[in-house]
Amino acid sequence: MGQSEEEHLTGQQASRITYTLESSLDSVNKVEETAEQMAKKAGIDEDEVFRVTMAVREAAVNAVLHGNSYDPEKRITASFENTGDSLVIRITDQGKGLDPDTLPDPLAPENLLRGSGRGIFLIRSFMDEVHFKQLHPGTELTLIKHLGTAQTGS
Amino acid sequence: MSMKVTSRQVDGVTILDLSGRITLGEGSVQLRDAIRDLLAKSSKLILLNLADVNYIDSSGIGELVAAYTTVRNQGGELKLLNLTKKVHDLLQITKLYTVFDVKDDEASAIASFTRA
Image (cartoon, rainbow over all chains, first blue to last red; front, side, top):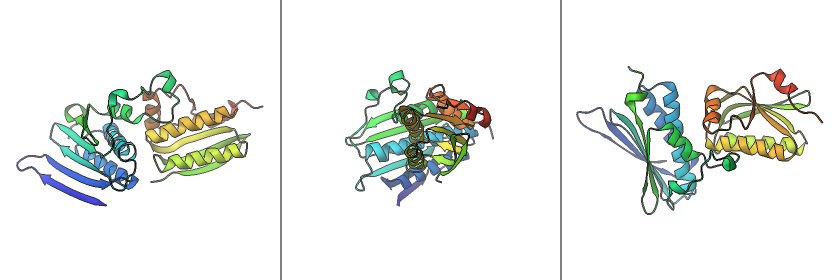
């Protein structure tokens, strides 16, 4: 389905795995599964595993659906890294770009009954840090979960 | 990975027992189709039993909202039954918990529908 690249940093626990994937729902599911495995391996509690997994799924859906519009010519990338302090997940697309400041507030009364527009809100709710970067073309989302607060101990 | 939908009738109310995931491209479409089929048959009192729905994403949340507004716009009622903790928490975060009529007992949920 895509190519993957894994680099293990010598002498540290940190390792990063990167996938380059087609703009498909299969890719979303692959990214989601990888995030879940990574979060479980990090030893965080079940609720935090759910939050990280869901946030990453939402980011992948955004990249595939809103970014690349399922374009078979376009790819998404997803990289996963446990730095020891944090889980860092980066998702990129090759779409038109996303300005997070222009997104309507899904909690505003006039937007509550909208059928969409909650993805970025949920990502921000579930992660400790969310960063947007314009790639011209495309968007890179960086999702960070700090392990200090999320870890239940091992 | 996908969702299973089964349908029951109790005292004029259609209960849809959903199990699995309501997510983009999986359960969302099945839920939409199930609601459309019920409305086509003029079954407008609908109770969604979410006891076995273990996962829902923003697309699934959107589909629940769409189901709610579609049924309401046609003069019907749609209520939710037996939310798992995860779905409950998601509806709280998105401020939808108070929009939906959420029940945790099937018999009282059935009794709460407004009959013509």
